[in-house]
Image (cartoon, helix red, strand yellow):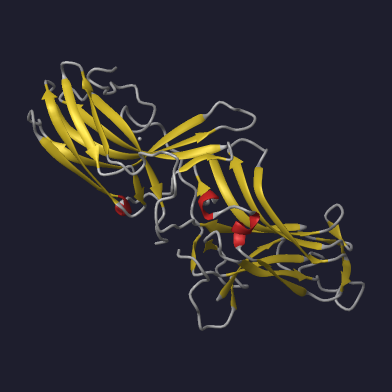
Length: 377
């Protein structure tokens, strides 16, 4: 069991600055802090961006286990203490307890002297949605604990805290808990925030931080796909599409819902081919839709996460091409599907089937699939 820490306000004990530090008791998994995704420009037609190429239509009609973390025989210790790497982040399931300590370090000269007067110390577990370019953040979870009443401190002191049941104690079940997410235009964050009561940033005559945070990652794991109101969610996908008198194909995928390490298996049948096809590609596209309170019109941004060539050359009429995509081998970080997260944003995934002819024209058809997390890798 370890502790991860967050330190702000400079080095404690320097001059007349006080130190406020948050440390988290480590669960089973700790990873390096993920880097935010690089912003991409829309891709070419049919690649997941704002496509303007021909779209195929119908021939006749114009997508950890429950319980505590595994036992660790080593005693609790601090990770990220002075001289150690603090650029790590804890990974929790919704039901995991979130525990740690808040350390308040009194500047030199105040110990044994006039002391440090504050107006109370509070710790909060916060879930927040942040939209790029907006200053109005939506905090959908705020659990708080008072760690210390207003008092006068003469020595540095640590205050332990525990949020039993983690974020699930806010009244959300496993199925209603959304994972941490960092996208191009929106992020869903979870963090603990320690706040020291003060006026004007001065605490007992000393300058120091009155608030500091420690980020944590939430990963929601289920043994089976989450329940859905759609009665056809677990049925295979089968659809006939094409361009009238030119192209008529039938594609099918084994099912609509996949876990993040699953394999997408399908088949494409060519019923009519009067176009000189050069190749066929299959891509996985993530679409992020954001509807800010200040701007209710949704902003959509699509990103092609992976693209594979599944056929090379002209197909024959009546031929069939097998399709297989290993989701676990995709280098981009996949997340479960998020639908209408508190009315702020959605994250959806699509299989994009693209046919390229000899004149480099692209004909594409997207089909939505649903992703869910079966385990934490």
